[in-house]
Amino acid sequence: MPTLALFPESGTQLAMDAFSLRKCYSAYLPDAPLLVIRKPPRHAAYVRVTHWITTFAFLALLVSGIEIVISHPRFYWGETGNVLMKPLFQIPIPSSRNTVPTGYRYVLPDQNGWSRYLHFQSAWAAVLAGLVYGIAGFLTGHFGKDLVPRQGDLTWNAVRGVLAKHLRSAHDDDAGSYNVMQRITYLAVIFVLFPLIIWTGLALSPMFNAAVPGAVNVLGGLQSARTLHFFVSLFLLLFVVVHIAMVARAGFRNRTRAMIAGALQAEEHS
Amino acid sequence: MSKISRRKLITTGLATAAGVTGLAAAARLAKQYGLAAPDGGGIYGPGETLNYAAQRVLAKNALAREFPHSMISKAPFANEVAPPNNTFKRLQSHGFADWRLAVDGMIARPASHSLADLKAFPVGRQITEVACEEGWSYIAEWIGTPLAEVLNAAGVLPQARYVVYFSTDSDWWDSLDIDEAMHPQTLLAWGMNDGDLPVPFGGPLRIRVPRQLGYKSVKYITGLTVTDSLKHFGKGLGSASPEGGYAWYAGI
Ligand code: HEM
Image (tube, rainbow over all chains, first blue to last red; front, side, top):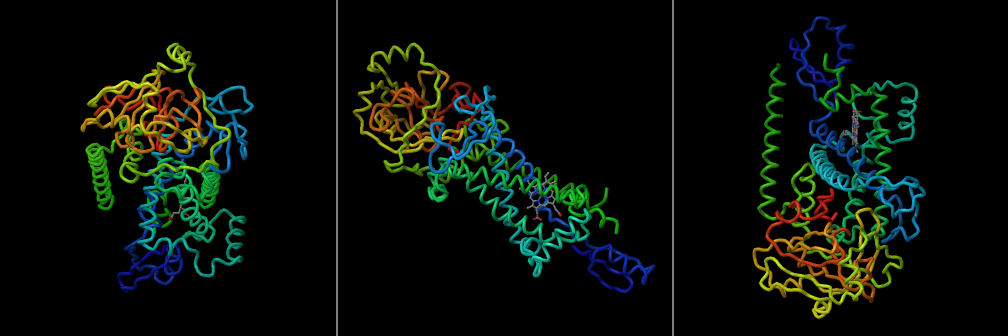
């Protein structure tokens, strides 16, 4: 985001980032009073609020989801599946039910009660925050402006450039906006993984399936929906891990502060 | 404190206050329109009430999916049940000839039905899936008496809002709102896959609520009580499930 600067004496307005502003013009206008009159935040308020609601909800969904899966760590394909049927695969962990053959000699304590309450409550929080974010994102043109890759950025060379830069140094100096890799992953999360996790999750609800039978049927049945829900959550987890690593490389404290307060610190003193 | 941050503080404060007031108003409305779940107190109350209210508003009359004969599971899984108590064993030794379903509460004609009485009502059949909250499932054909038939014969009073059901296991009881109880697919099942309902699957009599998870379909049903409030049943949370940490509303 450029800083909009006003030189009161000449009446000139300049839009550029604060660093260049000082570097380029201080030599020519050493004593010119510089007044920063508007500094658009890096992230709009609705992005910041919904981002952190989603983050808390995601952590709660992850913990409770793992708890729920422990009660039946077997996955099937099709409409039905139970311990008398052959699973597609089984996660080699102990279970919280003694009816599940796991190979372990012990049974974990049942945590499904609060896990399920928490899972659905967090799902509501994530979905409602996602709706606010999605609607506001379209209305403000945020997706088109800040997330759809810029023209020319979608070439293999541009992507390789971003990757090479990241491998060479941790310093990300193009802090003005998201780079092409960030844009692609954010779009994938917002418009592919998020809708898929909601869809496959709803398709596990017998009441939802009564109301919208097509939603589960096109996925191949209840057990297919459950298996897909599991894999989509793995992809989301992978995204979050890479996402946090990328934020860490770009400067964890500064970027996270910006996601909380709106602006990067470097710009705050200009 | 600068002007900006003071303004920010005031806006945030006002937004929070509006949010809290909004939530309180929403809770009041939910209660008034019968959208609040009986276990909607507590920290997980908002999620539980949203689940239940969404169903009441969007899917009150939706029908559970029914399947073709060819999809009936060859390996249905009965799950574990508590060992039968002495009353159950005595009834079982007489072929359940003395099994009784007591119907009482806010109805015009209290009744006590034998299995033969129940079978004299119009018969309901459905091929539906039992989905357990743990994640597994199976499909079976369920044959029984629609709960609505029994309730209509009993003459439900207009102020009735819930039907509570009890089993031989005193720790296992539950309830449905009156719409779910009157739903055409809610069944008092005594048959499964063209035979008698086997004991491991809830025989001689279980309730089948195909639009909710398996734990709502309580086995070994012995009594129905029609009521306008769930306050005086157990801890007042609607069923034994919330007392064990599980949600009363099991449509998800
Ligand atoms: C502790 C966990 C997390 C941290 C520290 C974190 C941090 C951040 C930061 C600093 C940014 C801005 C990046 C930049 O300015 O270059 C960001 C953006 C974003 N994050 Fe996260 N994040 C976390 C978890 C999540 C989760 C769980 C999700 C979703 C599942 C998520 C989705 C996003 C998206 C979609 C954006 C782009 C937002 C936009 O500009 O519209 N994040 N995150």
